[in-house]
Each structure stands twice: as structure tokens, then as C-alpha cells.
View (cartoon, rainbow, N blue to C red):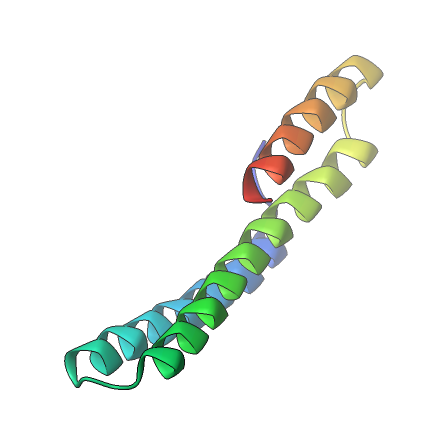
Length: 88
């Protein structure tokens, strides 16, 4: 299933933000910053990536529920559920 462009834009924005945060974490490690600070920032990166994944799944689920035949929707919902659980 292809992701609609409006969702793609939001996800790319989230991923770019996470990319910047990850670069910050690497710099923190290289400069010898406190372990607690590094872990806090790493957790923020992880949450940002999770949110990007959930946005993709939510967009796909909306499409599944509104497009295609009933059989196609059932199969797609099952796939999306599996993807959702892979992020948990």
C-alpha cells in the first residue's frame, strides 16, 4: 500500500528531526557528556522514530478502511496490525 503524500511529508519531517537528534547524541557521546543526558536524548530519538512509524501505520489504516474491496481491507488491516505490533 502506498502512503499518501500528506502523510509522507509529515513522516519525513519527523524523521529529519530524529536525524538531527541522533547526530546530537553522537556528538554528546564523542564529547564525553554525562550518561544520563545521553540516554535522555537517545530516548527522545527513539520516541520520534516510533511516532514516525505510527503515523505511517495510521495513514495506511485510514486508507484501508476507506478504499478497496472488503476482502482487500481485511488483508490490509491484518498486515497493518502486524506492523503496528512490530513497533511495540
